[in-house]
Length: 218
Image (cartoon, rainbow, N blue to C red; front, side):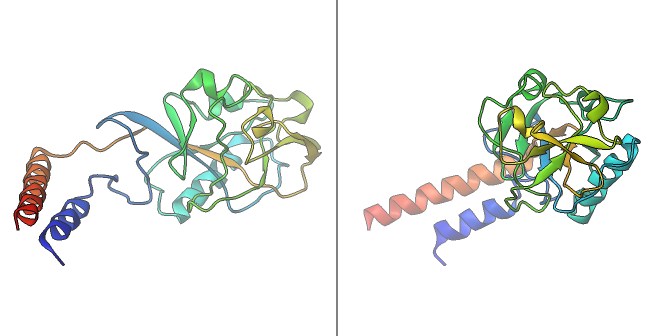
């Protein structure tokens, strides 16, 4: 291994591009300390017969925990007659899917009927691409769909690859059918490198530049 490659390996090993838990991705382009949220579609499925939102939140949390993300609180993007999705899964920052793609720029963009960026919530908790049907029980603005909220005989379902209003409201189905759920994280913060890390990074970049100049001179 030549010296520039050794230095780059050292910089990568510092963990500048991730959080303490490697599974919790940090999307590219975020400033140190910037707040963001992650969203995924569960690889597992469930019926939608329960009218208790905690059932769906627990399902989302269990999926996240199984993927190594249990240190973070997750909420299902779903509505029952007692709580709306936009109150249960609170959006307060930019939202990214598990591939690091921007889904929505904030609360208004997330709940205005469609995701204008054109990206779906089509990656599961393990970062695998998924085209799944999803229980939501919701209107496109995140409010409950009344007689088609979760826990009724029929409920609203959605399609994970879509960014139009059908990302959350595609049609209705009997709640005894098993579909996936969407899970939204609590706010996360992009890592802030310690001063020592900045110094190591600058030293590493200096060595890369020095080695490159020597190679040109030779």
